[in-house]
Length: 461
Image 1: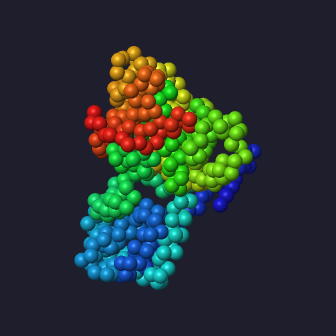
Image 2: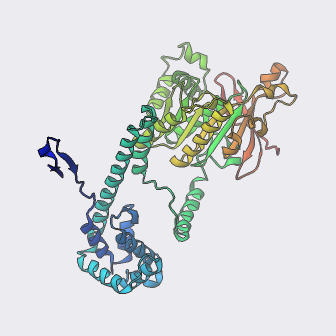
Image 3: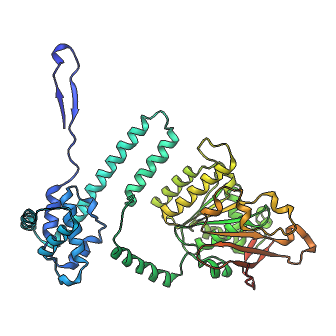
């Protein structure tokens, strides 16, 4: 509603326009829904919870208190199969939010009288959530407007932050929320049961990796390290391809190779063909080639070939993909090529910032983030050139941020035809926060740079 104040208008001044914003809420609807829940069957309340409604979605503070109390009563079987009003009153008092029991019972009776039918509660909950999201979007819009007027905030920063604000509203993220142990225990049981059914994480294409890591866990940050030419990209592409074949929505950020080069390797892996036979066009008209390309086109491996990418841009692209298509895993090839929007000069600080943001990205989006990291030349200067965890010491906080670290080593890169381990890629599990360390021996297929399963022996480090 817009009103004009004409004070001073007679003196030749322009009228002051004041915008009175209406409240984005339906307080009567909130009261009616709570009234429907008082004395209702407990099962009705759990149907309401399935809409995703939370106490924070209510506009009126005392509606939030009563909803939390109903939630507490519903979780206590001693109250039987219905939501007893006296039990709700007791739960509100125990919460410490009110001091007068007399006023509380009067309010509960009033709300009970406003109720219509418990059958309507689910639809009412959805409407309350709708109002809540609108309020949150309004706050996000106001925050975006403030940043737009901040001279220190660039347009690129504004777009990234605006996208995150909207994403957080849509995902229902709330910072600093404390969850009761009873609710944590319930979700933990669900987590354990799901892990029992599908394994702990997304399975690797390599049996040995699954033995040690139990798959790639959602919310965790993984590193694949090695010197140039060892097969880091090959391992990344193989794992990404394997996940996509299982239906996982994969975002593959290739900062070094073009999308065509990545697809060439994917098709070569699937056909068990040499990459050069695809690149020189020899297989361009073959039925198997066209079939694999068609399979890839309808698959779930999304490739981004941006050569200059900041962590903020990567996060923005991942959030956009999750909203539009879904997202199950993120791959980055490789960390040292990434840029940063900050004005840091030292490479150590830059890599630390990138590492921290990739770790946070995994946690925020609840997907595994798997990134390659190139080790320094110091590895080549020592007699035993197998990389170890300490080789990450000079690469920012990578060692601390990673949940697990896999080091790729191929003896034939150093020793050529004299190698005692030709066509072999050793994958050293040098960090594993929830498991053993060891080495997985795999077969390296030179014609298409594929790392695949072989009869391996687990060696304890």
